[in-house]
Length: 86
Image (cartoon, rainbow, N blue to C red; front, side):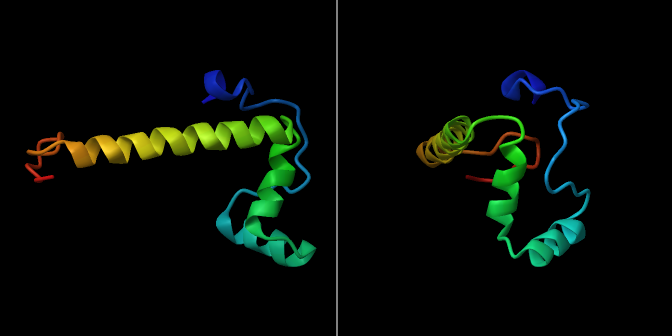
């Protein structure tokens, strides 16, 4: 992930809304009147520009969509040894 994001996991960046669990995330959202997406955008902006964030999200979406489309074009058994048909 670091290679893709260019951010070291232990960087000295201070997040505006630091949390370590889903419960903490929801508490911060309620406390500050923010949606999860708004809070996450504020945290991401500590590392990169909004343009970079949105471009990264579009890239992830594109890769996910391509995976689904490839799966729809293939027949047979899914990889993994469980013999699950497509």
